[in-house]
Amino acid sequence: MPPRAPPRRRPAPAAGGPGFGDSARVLLALAALYAAMSLLAYRVIHMRHVAPLGADAPRGNFSEGRVLQHLRRLAVDIPGRQEGSPGLEAAAQYIKGELQGLAARAGPEYRIEVEETLVSGSFSMMFLRHRVTLGYRNHKNIVMRVSSNVSEDDDPSLLVNGHFDSPLGSPGAADCGSCVASMLELSRLLIDSGWVPPRPVIFLFNGAEELFLLGSHGFIKTHRWNRTIRAFINIEASGSGGTDLVCQSGPGSWPSRVYAQTAKYPMANSVAQDMFGIIPGDTDYRIFAEDITNIPGLDIIFVLGGYFYHTSYDTLENLLPGSIQARGENLFNLVKAFTNPMLLKENEISNKAAKDGIEDVGAVFFDYLTWFMVFYSRDISLILHSLPIAIFLLVPLFLKFPNITLMSWFVTLLGFMRGKTEMWNVH
Image 1 (cartoon, rainbow, N blue to C red):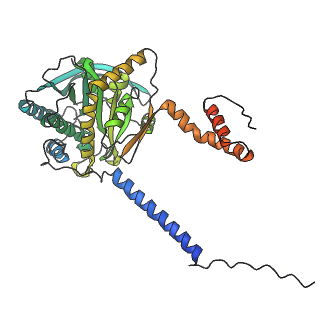
Image 2: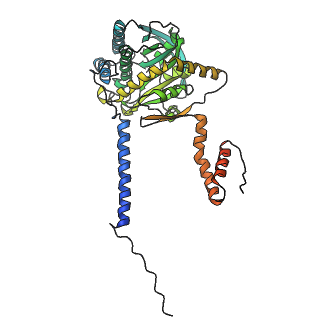
Image 3: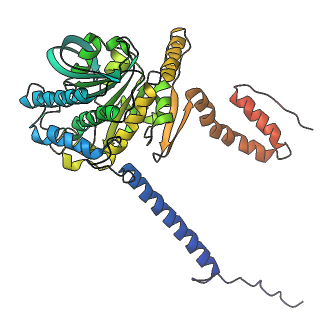
């Protein structure tokens, strides 16, 4: 028998052949997709997709340009706003003068009240795992209440808070001159837009946040409007702009749900709240929602450019354009939502349920590139987040017993998710 010829080997595709070309095209497509998504994420994080409006923008719009005019006065013309310094008093008088000017030209449909108050008190708090006891006297707050001309003194109200003092050695352009300047522009917008809030809006310009939250504590303990507050928005900055992140929300899920429904540029992530406890710092949110009272609210903070935080480089020039514009447009929508009587009533129902022992376990939420938000309760999250584990455990069984129908596996999976064990025999 003649010897058997060896099998012919198929030649490998040469470089540049059909196989190589297909792989190269796939790699190029993936690289282009990765580059495009990276560029998109960079633009979103740095607020390049938000066009800031100039100081000459229509009076019915929030304008970053007008905010920067206030900020130049607070962070450039005034040399430092540390507690006890002449600069802090100059900033207080500037804020008060701007608010009084708004009150003087408001229409008859508005009721505008502006006050300068000195607060004193004492309290204890845990800071960096140590108990700190504080006593203070005569710290200055500037307060403005905007309501309709038919509102009552005890009407449920929304508090918008920001501090105008700055840390030692820092001009405090972002922290928190940008907050105060945004509140001045927002209060102007409430009057010039012609929209009359159905429930009062209280603007608290507090002058002692850097010294362990003294200004907010003094307001919430001593001011006559403190018992009317049903929700609050705290504005802060630990960076020079970028994402204006909802870092804390609560108690309960109501504040974050309102935010998810109304923010024009949603920037929120419940993971930030889970991580906030390890940060060696605090905001006035702690006073309003945790330590002193349990008012539901939001803690909204600039987080990009943290290397400027509490340094001499926290200047007007280092603010990221578009950040204040996005913040202002979000704030205006939030003010409209939090003063909606129906939503406030919903909050009262939630509070009553909590007092009756029906606990609001909170929510899981995150935004997608500031386009929209995903929001669901923590109860639902237990199911959604357990699904990958359940599928991972069931796939080997599905491969080992291919004759069992998919419906049977699905029913078994549902039983697993309910915490029950069920055996199904399929014939």
